[in-house]
Length: 134
Image (cartoon, rainbow, N blue to C red; front, side, top):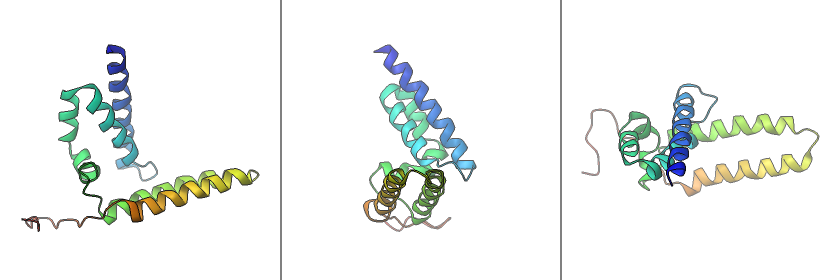
């Protein structure tokens, strides 16, 4: 059991690192790595989980999604653009593998449909204004 906890912490830290890099570099998507870190920290260490959910990185990228409230259009579009860019590299590299291109196009289409129709869209609060729900 202790080995599993250690592995989850290591994978969570790697996910956090990659997510932080992805938040800064436009080529690397932050969302899936931060989601991985949240999953690993929640299952391995209460201290790490509490620390992680209080970071600005978590609050800006995952908080509304994890709470089941959805994402802002800005976040959705950023994710869809990154997925499209990364998958188009693979698509171009599979010039001689038509089956691979078809599968990759299907996965890309699923991602786009999921983020447009499967994830709720929330309005982004304006800075300095109270939350409209209260």
